[in-house]
Figure 1 (spheres, rainbow, N blue to C red):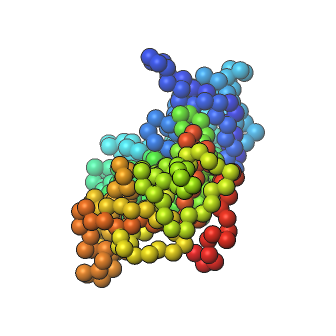
Figure 2 (cartoon, rainbow, N blue to C red):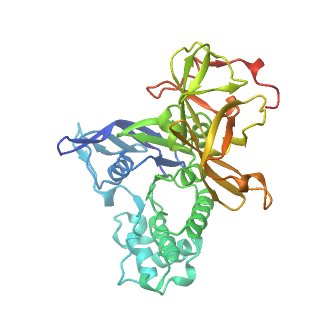
Length: 387
């Protein structure tokens, strides 16, 4: 295990215009921490991972594993991947098709230069690691004889077998179907809890990030947008970009008009909290689960309420996914489906309804995407106890 630190990492790819994949990136990863790099395609997370591995060379900056510098642009230090004592689990598994599972897992032990790997029993380490990831019974098979989930477990064993200082995961679950993805994710989380290895995990899936990460790095255009625990990122997204990426998919813009608030040309009704200190437009971000739908004539207390019309609805088992129109905007809601014949299942296209949400369930930002929670104060008296 190792404490990992990056300082001022910068990487630019040639093009017209050039693409800056990392922009003065600074990270500190604690020993034994599972760090997740989260963001959309092109945000720089995979380039960051490849720079840590030594597969990509930054234009500037420094990388250290504990007290050992593995890259320093100014000092001309750039250790090759085989000298960094890392393990890597690839998205495509990258198993040797002509080698048995035993030989695939043991490959890092045969190629490492460290004295410990030359003197310890290779077979003992391979079998021990295979048992850890539940593939001990597959050692004499070949990759072509394995399912996708089994191949991923073999790739994980190969990444861990040499007891590396740092294990790097490049979207390792993205090629698995939904059921296997959940299963392997749970196994990986349990394995990390048991072994405590230092890890950096790249994904664009927020559910993976929240489940696995001790801390999350939300990346945007090669820079850190927010670096915090999963709980704090989920509950207090620092910018509108982060809010959208971690599930607050609904966006409404509130504007002052005639002493009240409007959005999409519709008057906001009900117990609207006073948004103190902000006269300009306010962006509201909401999760689908935090939006309620009620009949058009029903009075809703202690909530922000807007007239809407049903656009589409889908049955999701225990819930209904309903899209409604508020003016020109589309809002996605997720509501309990209830018993057969319940109100949620009777919704039809163009049916008028009311959209409502508790003001404390929303996050507020300015038009530049900066959170304005410190500027916009919700009067506690406007939100009843227990709301």
